[in-house]
Length: 470
Image (cartoon, rainbow, N blue to C red; front, side, top):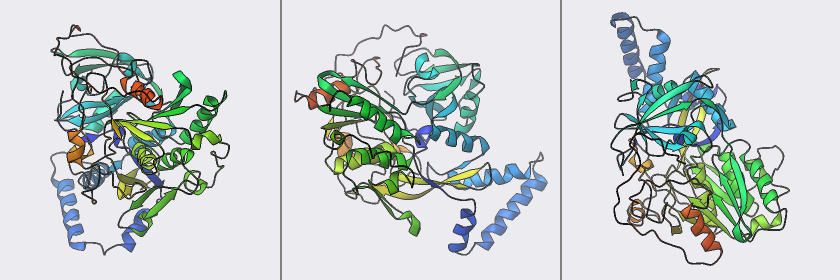
């Protein structure tokens, strides 16, 4: 399996959105900070003038300025970015749970576009796209050297229009050609069902505006016939989303006024503590946790995580782990422990700027280390399905400023399960879900199975066929 680095992320790097500031915030920050560097600004003006007057072709002023803004932000860290009109609109749509496209989270690896994860119940997932697939062509265009933004724009398009992706997949000698019909992507944030032995199962795919409200509805439905004897919260492949939603989900299982997460940065307003109370998760609106059944606060819990669990997912897992409210099970998480704020710079554009790091209730920094599960369980009985790059592998990632804490990279990597020599895939929440079955065993007091590598086998899968994936 590939262990090469994913150098930049798409949806998975949306991360925690700590708030939206007014457009006047940009000038306010500039005024309260250090004096403007006049010599450097004169250099910028000289370069701008040289390009405008001497470049081989005329370049619009707007394009030059946008490029300069984008360059400033892209050189900071992997999650700070300039959001042009399309990107700003997509970000807003994604947090509301509906957007157009194929339904995949993508990044770049060695100049190629790589799938971080297909989103459940979307055209990409139904067509057989898998995490770890490398997209080598979009229709007839090679993705080699193509920027992530350009690749995403090519994959967008009108609903019901076709697109053909050529995929390189580990273990497959020949490329796989997959035709997908674009559709409106409506991410179903929360889903649930009752499993064997009266154990409830709730999966959160992404932290959106209504995730907390939806969670309460599902919890009430699970308890209609009496309190479950156990609960499994599945955060695997959840790339994060809204900070308020992460606080609300954590608050559902914690006592009132309990510390969920804190943030710290250079600016005074970046130093915050967020508690399990309506002021922090409901922001002055109706307290949607007010009618929560009492059993939710005490039911034995397992939280499932993996390498695709990032940002808001890690906030929830870290809070429940630190307060010993749940047992964390699965694989070490992605390690995105930074907070981004969205600063509009016009009616249609904005910048996404990293302003602080966040910390678990015990003061642990998740940045570049992630959450180490209490119980490490592989993807399958034969081992993990693939290795994914984490935050620590990204170019220019922020360091963990509290090194030496539990969960450091060296310790975590030693405990990672072996890779499975198999093309087996599964959908989260099915009877074939190995990690879910181990969570059930744990709650039922049964032994937990460990991954046992099998002898190497040769796949009989046809080289050109698409395989149903997650």
